Length: 150
Ligand code: DQA
Image 1 (cartoon, protein in one colour):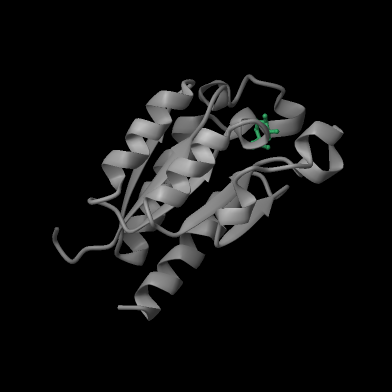
Image 2 (cartoon, helix red, strand yellow; image 1 turned 180 degrees about the vertical axis):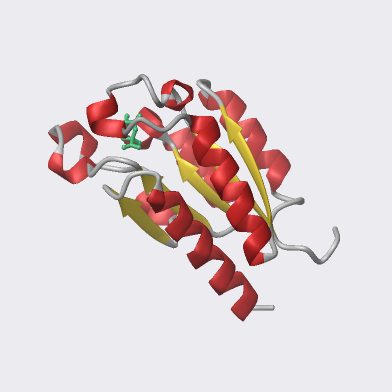
């Protein structure tokens, strides 16, 4: 692996619909708007940002297993799997990479079933309610931490 820091940004189920999906909750930006801003920010910060979205739990898990040897940190918005998936949590814990959990909406101000996250317990940090900017804050935090540990 080259010495360039590589950070993966994963988006879970239904996030491909951003822009048209409940825009009053999730905003009007599309996933590709968000991803291209993250790739640009990565360039500014001197890291490589890879983005990936799937609506399927197993595909996300396979993707995480593959990232284990190629990437240095994972930023993930697990979507609804946040509140249901032990398997996704196990995959994130199992790959031994720092994990940053991001939610566009403030899940704690919404329905009670969104208040619990299977992911937060193994995450370095959690950002929610700040819209798409949350991914950018997570990226900056991940880079700062990785640069400090180099
Ligand atoms: C979400 C919050 C989840 O509760 C929901 O199921 C999503 C999106 C967010 O980004 O706010 O799909 O993760």
